[in-house]
Amino acid sequence: MHTLSGLKKLASARDLVKDRVEQINNTGIIVLHNVSFSLSAVSLLFLIAFRINDSISLSWFFLSISVAFALIPILARKGYENTSKFLLLAYVDVCILILSSVFGKNMFIQVFYIPACGLSILLFDKEHASLRNLGIALAVGCYFVLDYIIFDKVYLSANEGMIVKWSILSAAFVTTWMTFNKFSESKELAEEQTQKLLEKTQSLNEELLEKKAQLEENVQELEEAKEKVEEGSKAKSEFLSTMSHEIRTPMNAIIGMTNLLVKDNPREDQLEQLEILDFSAKTLLALINDVLDFSKIESGKIEFEEVPFNLEDLLNGVIESFRFSADKKDVLLYTDKDEGVPDTIVGDPNRLTQILNNLMSNAVKFTEEGSVGIVVNKTSEEDGQLDIMFEVTDTGIGISEEKQKEIFESFTQERTDTTRIFGGTGLGLTISKKLVELQNGTIDIESEKGKGSTFFVEMPFGIPEEATEEVNSFSQYNMSETLHGSTVLVVEDNAINQKVMMRFLDKWNIKVILAEDGEEALKKIQHNFVNLVLMDLQMPKIDGYEATRLIRSMDEKQKSNVPIIALTAAALKEVKEKVYASGMNDYLTKPFNPTELQKKLEHYILNKQ
Image (tube, rainbow, N blue to C red; front, side):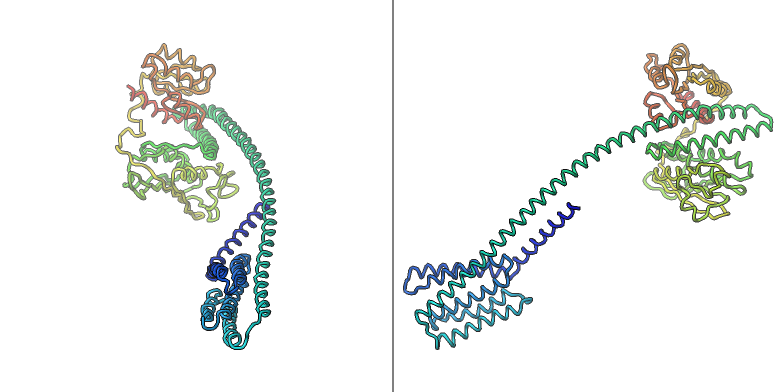
């Protein structure tokens, strides 16, 4: 507050000085300065002239009047502008009066009263018309005194001349005294203000030092808080990584074994139980993924790919993943892709799948009859980029207009009992909205209570320079024929996960070599030929990262170039970056999707062959 007050006072002083400068620069003051100094100079010249010629003793007069004219501008600068102007007019009129009296009527000095009237007009503006008129009246009055009294009737004796002389000297003295008195007062005032300003400056400097010390203290506190936040963020990431690994490891076994049992031709009553088990496991996995994705988005650690992919395959994959749930309720699932939308586009297929899965999950969950579908249209295309609109529409329970404004907020659902009735965390739409916006897209909703909802997602995608038949679609071969006889080294320390992976690979006619840690994996790969390595990351002795680096450093090119796919329960960005940095070719998260695993095996084994 003191600082602001001091700044205000300094600003006021600056404005006051500015106003004074403007006043000095106005026309009247300029005229006053010029006329006063000019007349002072002329008076000095007359002083010199009359000192040389002693015929007329007027030296005293010109000396006093020169000093008076010189002091008038100083008086004006001290704020007595109108007084100074009027004194100037008075001195001019008196000078004309005395000089005319001395030199006589025939010298026509009295005609100078005409410019004296003009000087009154120049000195005073229209706002001071009364003073202007008074100055003109003074000049006229002096003329009449001179013309009708002095020239005709008044003759001064020597004593009377002395009276006039000393009167003029007294007037000059009074003017000088007034000027220097005001100058002295102004000097004292300036010294007082200077002292106050110095004291204020010292006070401000002390306050500035205090603020600086406080600022340094705050900076130190912020640095300490930053360190604590970074430590907390690191601890949070480690916790999420650990929890992800610990939860996904048993989930991998549950989902994997369920898939295997479904493929073993179970009885009809067993199939229904397996489908319930599979649905529940995938629901739990979706909840885990929601929490992890929400955490990654909030910490700014989400990342996006720019790869070509087949949009038709992606849409079919999304629809098929909800086929079982929809068929149980006799809800029709469909896709409708406009012919103007190319089959192959460039973007992040995984994030697009996640967005559509979240929207489809809600649509199927809240639709008891009717249909759920995905409609795809191209909205614009320019400079190798196209905007695509995805419409996920359903005939479900709908969303009230009030809730539509809140539906994209975290942990928000249509009713408080929605979680109890339908399940879910309320994070799906929040995550979808953030994923869409982070990719420069938009998401909106139209819904009517009891009639259904439509979510509109518009996102930009690239157009590949050359569309190929292999784009993001590895499934070009018949698995049982193409991978028959291939050898895969499975590096996994968990016995249950070993059995799950072996069962899948056995069904695909793939020979399996097991290793329980990185050290054993190095020995197995040195003594065996393998087409591919499935590498766990967190293992005793030598972990998956170090094992990969050692494999890549082997002298034999056939072994050092073997494809390595990370198979881990950790699903964080940092883990993925570390996977690629260590030299692995790809990444598969537990619990793995059998179809995705099949595609990656086809891609790396068959392409290498």
